[in-house]
Image (cartoon, rainbow, N blue to C red; front, side, top):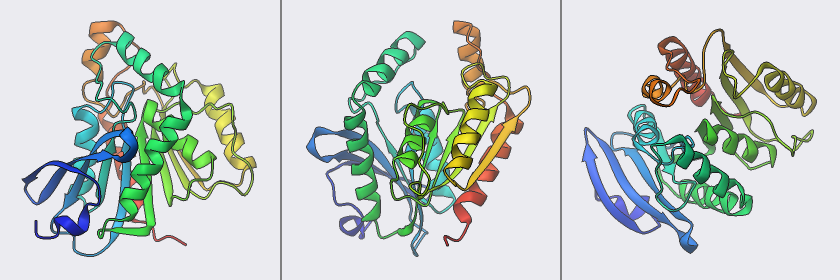
Length: 259
């Protein structure tokens, strides 16, 4: 707690401590929005830092839980509200509207991401050479976009995120390693999109690791997906094996020594 002034350079809205995990509400500059920082108080030496981007539902408890899990592993994690307004949906119609509104202003989304990146690089617990970004669903597409545009990151990881783009990666411009986990039974990320993505990454010379799970649907990492499927008749579903396997792959991804 004595290191608070050294760790945080933006406005602190509130702080709680649970089992060595320090949770701090932050606000980004220029009215770009808010987020939640999770730090492990036992982590004394610089390690990997991870920016976490939420599903289309918004910065809800699931996104925060993933960031907290990363902090428990000894990583600094910053979950950012990519909608910038604190909106959280519980109905797919609202989630779609929030997502489409955000995507209609890609420069604003980029500003939010870059503000989060700047904040992370100023944390004592973060090794600047080991800054990552991960995303789920909508967030997966966000972090892949950052990789494509050449943002200086050690790596990005997308979980059941969209792989298509109108601005494909160019050879020599992608700095980040890329990890993608997708379900073969996901109609939102069909096989032709996956194969097109692999071709795109190969042509651009990207260091890509692809996990493709047979019979697995969209949102397979989210335990709440089954309830969503039942309530709204959506083609989503939790898969414990795919969740665990993709999480273990992420742990290996983050632990790798940068070249």
